[in-house]
Image 1 (spheres, rainbow over the protein chains, first blue to last red):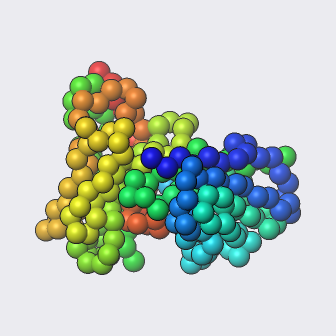
Image 2: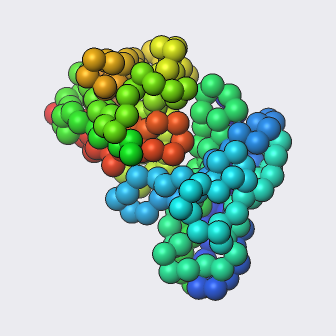
Image 3: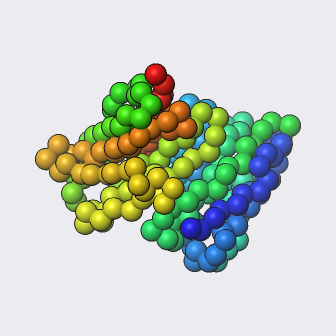
Amino acid sequence: DIQMTQSPSTLSASVGDRVTITCRASQSISSWLAWYQQKPGKAPKLLIYKASSLESGVPSRFSGSGSGTEFTLTISSLQPDDFATYYCQQYNSYLITFGQGTRLEIK
Amino acid sequence: QVQLQESGPGLVKPSQTLSLTCTVSGGSISSGDYYWSWIRQPPGKGLEWIGYIYYSGSTYYNPSLKSRVTISVDTSKNQFSLKLSSVTAADTAVYYCARDNGIWGQGTLVTVSS
């Protein structure tokens, strides 16, 4: 199985900050990586697919980069609505795996 | 616009089989090159992929659950289903159905308890 490791597990930041979340794969997954945002009691929402493609309707302050085994999600200027938990997901293998999540909290 | 909705019992007894259905509206489950997934999330924990059925009918399951999971499609009802056998308290979770990456149901909480 491909293991996905996110860092940090928790991130404290302020409105207006630029933040970056990292996701590492245990083997190359090319660009088959997605990022999700999840708020309490809600289903995950797709933000980024194929490592860097922005899902329709997602604000442009979200961006993704990387390929192979190392990937990043960047939020250029945090907004109050962005405080949530973020997950990466690989779909290179037919066995899909998620990262353990990064909780983004208000400093 | 395609929407997904999970349904099924919210309480299942230990050792029994958990059965959930995902109803697809706004599009046909048999059209397009899609995979139809089940994902779960134990209370306060992260997401765990359970498995999916591909549009061709092929199924792929999480190795840790493979011996207990069956995912199937009923094209006549535009639904796909999850069966998880021999459940324990560790199977208590919110269960989500999804199409590819981008379309998810709202989730349904299933509690395993006697």
